[in-house]
Image (cartoon, rainbow, N blue to C red; front, side, top):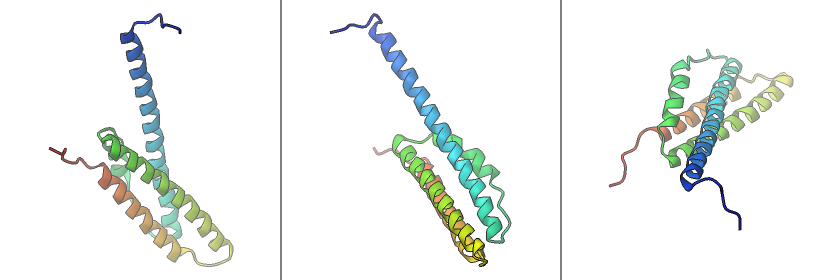
Length: 134
């Protein structure tokens, strides 16, 4: 059996630092994916023949919502963002195929753009503050 040369308080502090660093890295990845889905959404808007939306406020508010979320909210929101990114990437691939065939991609692009908005609304609703159970 090996014993640590560090006192338990230092080991605990090191674990907290590692946990904090891992959480920050994960939050940064989720924020980056959130920004990515908005970039992809702008591409889809062009294909849907609609004006890209101004999403600056939504992008700016997201990190604070994520930071203030409970663990369960964070987990659901992170999965939702990841799912939305995958959906949009696959959708853009399908739209590129439609375009390559010489077909008009505007109707399916509009449907995909609406899916983005539904997914985004769900993620944002999940992150809204909820009353704690008594």
